[in-house]
Length: 122
Image 1: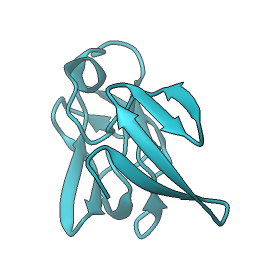
Image 2: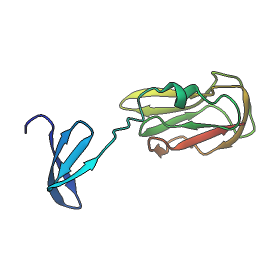
Image 3: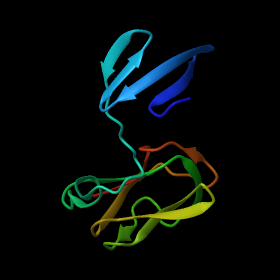
Image 4: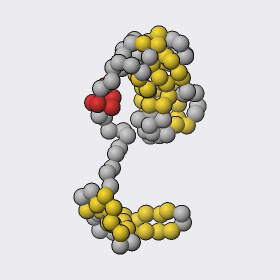
C-alpha cells in the first residue's frame, strides 16, 4: 500500500482508509479525526492536578505485576502505587502528591486497558 493508505478490518469487512492530515476517507465518506496516544507523556494529564482526588491510570494496555500499596495507606509524592507490564517492560505508576489511597482497583495478574483507573489518591 502507498503512504497514508491503510487497510481496516471491522466486523469481518475490509475497508481502505486514506489519511490526509486530520481527515480520514473511507468508502467515499470523509471524517475529521484526532489520534490520541495514551502512552505519550502530557504535562497537563500527568502532573497538572496535584490537588483533590488523583486517579492513577494505566498508560497502556498490559498486566498488573505488583500492587505496592493497600487501600487506606498514606503515600508520599513520587511513591510507586502499581507496576504494570506492557510490551515486556515494567512501568511503575506513581503518586503525583502525598495523600491517602482512597480506592484500589488494581489486582496482581489482572489485564488492564489504557486509561483504566488502577487507584485513587485523596
